[in-house]
Image (cartoon, rainbow, N blue to C red; front, side):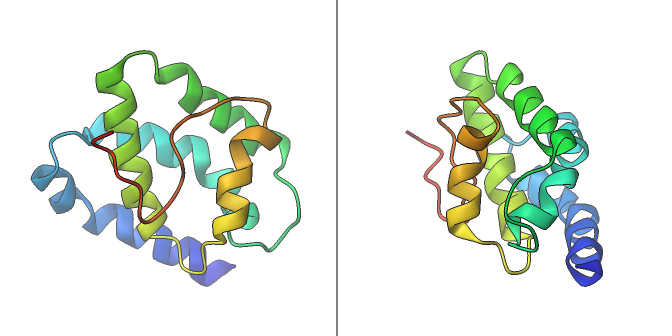
Amino acid sequence: MAKNVVLFFTLIVLGSSIAQQTPQCQEMIREEMVRDLTPCLSYLTADVNSPNTPCCIGVQNVHAGANSRDMRQSICVCLKEVANGILNLNDDHAAALPGLCGVKLNIPISKSTDCTK
């Protein structure tokens, strides 16, 4: 678990150069998403079987920000980049996370999401 957290934050620091190459993922959105979704790491890596309350609050915050097509695309790109930085991401847990937190987020947390759609 500690390795995952260190890798996650290392990727975020190093990922700033990726953000510059991907204009849809704005730095502010990335920072907010990292803050909001950090409590979800233990669930996303299958260390626990259900998301905790702080995780679900973070997912709800991400959902609240997805209020336009441009924002959904930006959030999608950022989610994809964050997903790529999570060692041992459990795809089933990632796909189930929004529903378990009571939101319909039509943006999958996945390493292979096509954010152009």
